[in-house]
Image (tube, rainbow, N blue to C red; front, side, top):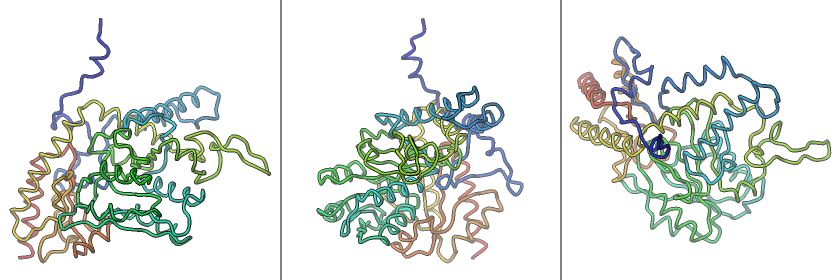
Length: 418
């Protein structure tokens, strides 16, 4: 008889060459050269199983969900709600009702900020705390609320290595602090922040915490109950899933308290011209026809990841990070921006006398894709007194050979500017 428990626990042995076969785009040629894709912090590539799930939905199961009693609608509804259940298990939420589907991490933060404002959670004079390394999506939504009322935004400083000053953070909390909203892993520095400590300090002061997990979920095993975060936001397209789908996780006590961010169909229980009553969680936050295919594709991405031991994937990415760091630092005039002790597989760098845009443009001729610019973290660029950086970000389908090609490309850039 098959031991089901042991069977489920068995994980597929990680082999990078076998994994690369699962991602069809990695076979692509760019400018006649094999693609070297090193922009995973912006978006990850998709395994064939995710692509197939999207095609299957549109070819065979396309129908609107929740309201139809016919066969296709029931199939689509079941697939979509199963996706919510898989995400609940993936992040170890208590209930699938704590998983709200949104377009991405940005919309999730906007949902919380606007709902807190509409629900009068904030009062004039209240404060929220963010960090000096936030993505614009965890700065601008709070500034938009600040434009409507007297809300003070406090910023946790960071040191020259790109690490948050936790002692300074502790001193920022006051009786007026109503929320701490911080990034788990910096998209431009790679810093892995001590979020459990940040949450523990906030909760001692009865302050809830929102974590921007857009970069953390692709690289780390996430357990929201262990973290004890009150909110977690992340995007499907950074976790090997489709674009246009993301998740707001929230503890039930907060989601119940928050009014809907948008109104329309599917988020209501009753509507009259005099009054509307809203549906239960999570549906009261999901107005209109959702990205059904995106949710199904996201579930396929999670199924793909769940084949592997996440710690093994993280360990391999650490090998790539260490190897790339060593090789890049051998390039004369190259400086890495962000040297925290605890980093994910992201390296931002500058080369003396060469603009990052020139770096990115030239190595693209060899099929090497990196990101250049401010990475939607202009305050970080100001902190390190650089206009922009070049950024190479790695995933478990990358190889040391690709890093060698990056280094060769950068040396070619240096020769051109010599």
